[in-house]
Length: 288
Image 1 (cartoon, rainbow, N blue to C red):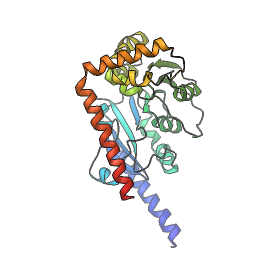
Image 2 (image 1 turned 90 degrees about the vertical axis):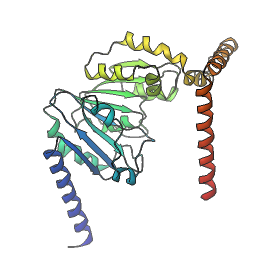
Image 3 (image 1 turned 180 degrees about the vertical axis):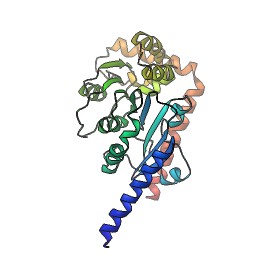
């Protein structure tokens, strides 16, 4: 048997092993090329496929040590059926053919669920959309989707997209999906999910999404709290719409100063993180 055939046989054996593990266990953890997939299935209720955003890739060492994929602990600890996808070592945008084959060959495992849902942030939206057919996804909750140049398939999903319309790139990509419903996080840029969380509304939003009962008025009422976050003022000072008048700029600067004076610990923590990030970058540059 030549080397090419041996490699193909090894791949087929791994696929059979992965499939067998999923079939035998209501909880499973498999690695499909450069993606960690971990699931916990409790009952036949809705199942959520969670797709990690860019910047949360795990290292092989972290995978070997049992690090959980993005979204898994959050959803499983709340009694939600979940299958989480997390890239390993590289943000490959969920385009690997082996991942498609895994989803296609295991799709029958998820047919009996009441609904199949997707929860994704930024680059994770690529995974939700690319695998939507194989996983038979009915509805998706996408935060600040980043689609890059990925060629997306046609789909029949009901998409709820959460994004900041003041952020030109996010607005363009969100609207390109022709979403069924939109929730706006005005003035926070690409950090939509962080801002929803800071306003204390991430868990209620995900709960209501799973239950298919999102109330827009409740979301916008909660998001008034974004003006109590540093992110809102730091982003608005950039004048993302290009329409800030001198008076408006002055109001934002004064409000930002007041926030900084009222939250000295948060300001110092941000400065510390910024300084540490720059120091690490300098060390990497020197060692490189």
